[in-house]
Amino acid sequence: MALLTALAVAAVPLAAPLPVQAQSVPRGIPIIRDAEIEQLMRDYTQPILKVAGLAQQNIQVTLINDRTFNAFVMDGRRIFVNAGALMQSNSPNEIIGVLAHETGHIAGGHLSKLRQQLAVAQTQSIIALLLGVGAMVAAGSNSGNSAAAIMGPQEMIRRSLLSYQRQQEESADRAGVKFLAATGQSAKGMSDTFKRMSDEILFAARNADPYMQSHPMPAERVRALEELARTSPHWDKKDSPEWQLRHDLMRAKLYGFMDRGDAVMRRYPINDQSLPAKYARAIATYRHADLRAAVAQIDALIAAQPNNPYFHELKGQALLEGGKPAEAIAPLHRAIGLAPQPALIQVLLAQALNAQNNPKSAEEAVNLLRTALAREPESADGYAQLAMAYGRKGDLAQADLASATAAMMRGDGATARQLAARAKTRFPIGSPGWVKADDIVSTARPPASAGGRR
Image (tube, rainbow, N blue to C red; front, side, top):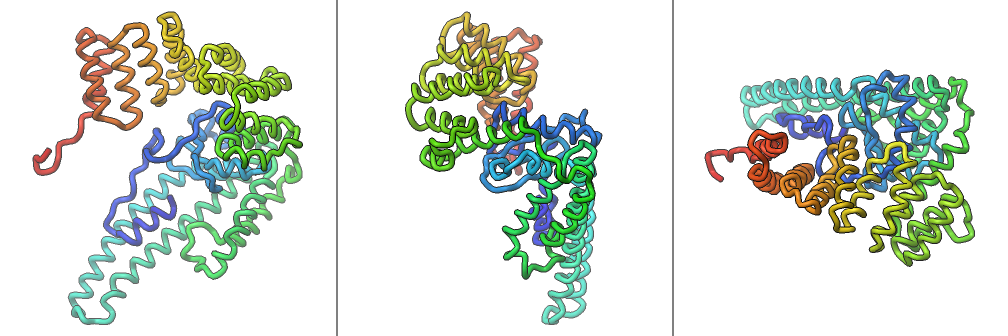
């Protein structure tokens, strides 16, 4: 975002800053949803958010399906983390340091302040452009100084904005170290992560102009961060074995789902009998090989950790996707009973129940989905399953309304409007369902075209 906003001012001085959605994930960003990983991210961030005074802000960590190492914030409600950052982090402390840094941005109100700076820079840019044009007119179009009269002030504005962003990054570093110290955690992982990233871009940054960077120069930043981090009494503190195991299981899960089967086997060879290695191989087996062999491997995982909800979830998911939805119901019920926040697993169980194609299972699916959607109100898949469950029950009005909501969540306004309009004809006028359908019709209505054309 720092690069995009800087370019918006420098290359197109009259353009408005890009809009940022306050709560929902911007469309086009490929998101990964997973109950296990999201719970781990909550456990990582909650202590940091508490000491930062943000515990009541409902800040979420959103996982992006991207293999590069990156994390960023786009509003005051979400921290975006690439899957690659999790996969490349060897310890919980490394990714916790990244989360602490991003929390520093939110706690410091950097995004709103950056928008203010962009607004100021935009005003300055317009004034500079007008003054430059005036100078060109006064000097004549053939003057060699005409371009400089426009480009010089623009360059100064851009450098000023980049300098401000570098100050924000340094401030977020300091805040992150402070939060880690306050929670009794080491900042060594944060320092090590930034050093690794610094080494990777060292060659590219060697001849870079430090005043043209939106982040502090790597060596300078790493040195300052390490000096600060070493002042903490927790510098040498290690992650607990429990957290390390959960972290390793999370990484194994990502590799199991995102890599090809042969790549998983090379990373986690058969002679590696650790629990994370078995987890990755079980996932790869169900995705790329034999369902029966995969279920046997998952059962071995469950035997090792009977109360791990996500092993039961994996078994249910494997059976459901393997064409055995009836057999998936029991392990998914077990997973829901064990998971701290099982909304995503409830949607999966509802899918298995809908596959039974009978009103009794559909009634259970409706109840599950209403509970899940209370926690996941933007889940298009949840509303799609709810529509199917209502259809199984013969409640066509609610089925149309749920289908319209699912289309709305996916950004398909035309379909949402069509389904909601049909739902209105099935509900009594003025009833809660009719009002909700009417809201969708109004919200999804396309704006009038310019010039009266359609």
